[in-house]
Length: 396
Length: 242
Ligand SMILES: Nc1ncnc2c1ncn2[C@@H]1O[C@H](COP(=O)(O)OP(=O)(O)OP(=O)(O)O)[C@@H](O)[C@H]1O
Ligand SMILES: [Mg+2]
Image (cartoon, rainbow over all chains, first blue to last red; front, side):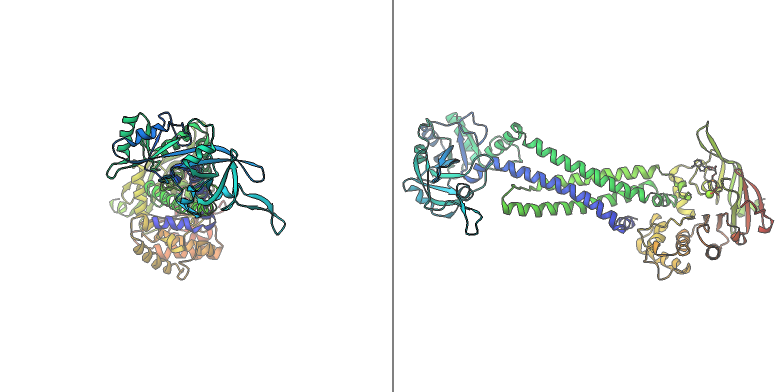
């Protein structure tokens, strides 16, 4: 009977197409919106991805990575003396105004890294060498930032053309020259950018007047010392706060700075709410469209279900038929929707805008919700069929 | 009397059936008595609204009367629960409807397979039986098409195949020819007669169509919710009101 149930479903191509459209659309909306949401949220802990270090140490009041509360330079020595620390390097981050050659000002994120270890240096340089940062007045700019800080001019075709900054170009930070010796490729951030990398000591010069410049300390544990274990020791010995750098935001735990940053934005901004609304919208649209189409599918077949009932099929069999139909449609609809979301996501990832992170959990959740929609539709259909009198087969 | 009881297929006694609320009540059957024998084709005739379909539904176990007893092939239907009634229909009944009621999204052969699949037969077995009976009703070659591609007469042939594929002892037909033209209706009734003929099977046909009366062994005339007369010869009927 279930095979016939499927044939009944596939027999009406137009109805089926509409049903699948509804389910696929809601799956798409839910998966896509959630992925963009997690993509944007992943921007909140961008520094954790760009600046690679096993352990981060901050002021005890720090709650998330974008909100640095400067430390004393002497804290560095205290951390270095903690048992299990292989090395500790200073890190400076701040927002400063940079003056371009054409006189325009741009807000940049200045990142000062340790000139000895280059701890926290960008992983990928598309031009230049990291060692060139040891030359005077030098900086490395990220690709996207180089374009953002570029010169607007007129191209050969007469259209406006942006010329990105290149190696050799200069600008000024607080009247001090900054010469570009490299271009790096880093992940975009929620707050901040263009990223301008320089050495920690030079960053001090660029931010003249800043009383404290040590935003974070990047720490490497000795071999055999687990990062979380080292965090405990650092906190116990120095009274500072120590974090691990894992970016798995799903598992619960206090140590990950990325996770804390994520949840800080979750609880302190309206982003989850606005995206939650979009996801809910997808759910409602899905329930409405698929529920409605499935309901009309049932209505259209009501007299046949009544006939099947009269011929001696119990409600159990009919209920299972409807479940088979609804869940099959749900499965295909989910496949289509998730596939489309993936395809759109691929394009988005290529363009980098908007960000897109499709966790497997998103797919599972979407899958569960689409099956939920199917379940509700089937139950509505079952109620409808159970109310129809088998005797009605003789009428009309 | 004991000899007669042996031949009885359907017996309904003192059946009351009314619809609607107590204040606004429509009486469909009023102390109706009805009997059909094994091996016969009996027709139920009478003016519109006299209760033919209602009586048929009561016999078929799709409608439970407020009063009276119904016995079909020795099985008392009154007092059976929904589940038992459903199981009873699954085993004992074949239906032919006025509007064919073939599922349009299924092929002809799949439609015919439905009663067997409901009984839990395997797909392959059901398909083989369905193909065999489709051959008998003259639909060989049309089995994998959709019902809508068939003429009305052909669709009703498909419906007859579906009604008989599981060899039910009781075949119930409500106005099987009224959606068909005269010749087609005659052919359909001929087919019902030929295929359902069996000393153990009883066929009950509700009809308005006096052109098919000649296919009946007996004709029961209904009036105001009860059987008023049963005749052996259609010529004895007063057909002016039909
Ligand atoms: N489900 C129902 N609800 C209310 N009234 C009903 C219902 N079924 C039948 N009736 C009424 O019961 C009476 C008998 O109906 P029934 O359908 O049995 O007549 P019929 O002899 O089959 O008529 P027709 O020849 O028009 O098919 C009619 O008055 C009808 O209106
Ligand atoms: Mg009727």
